Amino acid sequence: MNETQRRWILRNRTAEAHAIVDAAVGAFDDLDSYKRYLLATYRFRIPLERRLENVDWPVGLGEWRPRRIGAQLQADLDDFGLPFPDLEQFDPPLEQSRIYGALYVLEGSSLGARVLLRRAETLGLSGDFGARHLAVLSAGDSWRGFLTQLEAVQPFDIDLATSASLDTFAVAAQAFQRD
Image 1 (tube, helix red, strand yellow):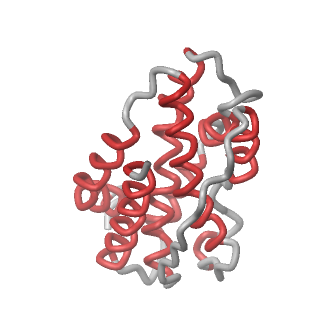
Image 2 (image 1 turned 90 degrees about the horizontal axis):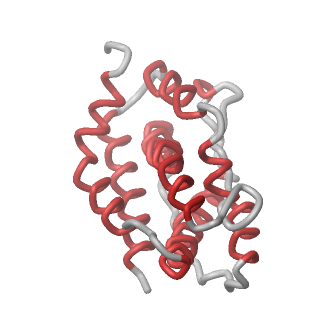
């Protein structure tokens, strides 16, 4: 496989699901819509982050691990006095290719976080108040590190990775469409 083939295959196969999530996130343009975004992000990320706490990480990932933003999300909710929302269980099968598929969605969110952080800043939020999780996701270049691992891992089943990516996008869409 060439250097970026897996990334582009996953991107193409999940484009529709990704668009649904993007539309569900929407363009928060006031504090009320931002708070809805924050609650939905918590509902999506926390169950998945908790599930990944007990993963036998694929050897191919080496020391690389996904960024966890649960503590920052909790602090952001606290900034607004928002209660922690009820969480649904998300138990993706944790076979190697499926882990990579779920991580494709989680790590890809760091790219969108840069745009979302700029929007949050226009609302007076920052990495110190209300938008900590976006600041953490936006920092550094964890995405490139993940892509390097994604392209190199063996054995790898692109269909299982795609399935896990689609499952992860579906959980995200459900979290953002719920009110």
